Length: 364
Image 1 (cartoon, helix red, strand yellow):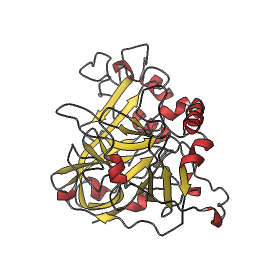
Image 2 (tube, rainbow, N blue to C red):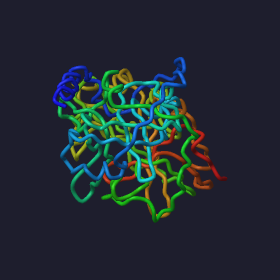
Image 3 (cartoon, rainbow, N blue to C red):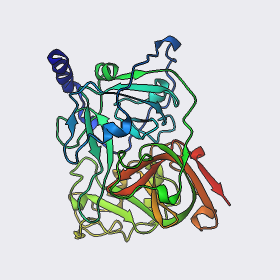
Image 4 (cartoon, rainbow, N blue to C red):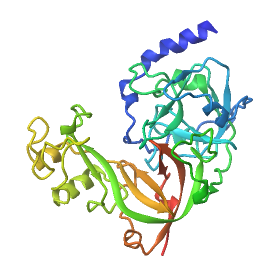
């Protein structure tokens, strides 16, 4: 057992610094040769996903030292580009993200595949927890120990780590989403242990557009992203954004149109850096053109309402449908939408991630 732990610890040196980036990134969407059909395996799970998640204690990532095996059906695909270096699996008790550390996962683990995860040597952690009155739970995840300490888990970057812990079982039909009501949505304090729908594929029906977005923009991604002078928040309104997200070119289009000229630069009450149209900190930007020069693809949360509950539909700027226009009937409130995707939590708020644009159905 000690020998196994030593090998796994040594492989941590192979974990790339890029594994610490939690934001959406470009996703490889070509096809690899399909794996041979006889390479699937079957293991015997000895713990459910909900029970495993229940072993996590807030603020204390666990380097798993027990021979625990979970099994679940793959419910996500990174082919349309809205998932990055990870996939979700679910059993009858809940769902969990596996931080795989490679692109093109749909080639190896198609939707509907049964996946077995040998958890010994992996790290159980959480992303998105925030304490306080306006905070709440995030998502319990499975990954590897983060050597930097910046996050509770990092990606399984090396093939050795992946092959030692992740085993593809039989192929199968895609999971059937659970259609859930407003009363079944999680509270701010729920995790996969207490609400069976968190991390699972679900369908939400009859959502109405809430006329606001959230998007965090870094003026210069090569500089300190925590500094107020390097941050722009688009929130509490739509700011003219009518697409599900923004690619680099779409970002520049919105910026050049002057739609955000009055948005203040900064955060946490520190807005002493001017506006997007007139930035005043030469260390980061001296003009809108300087902001434009450092533009990249941006993820956007489009807000919807399910009854009295707020749902953030989070879409990557690198997804194939990020620049698709939201139907005008949805934006003006004359149409509702049904969405099928993964129900997740971030700082006590519900975030929803769809696999593709086909998972959003508009009802005029």
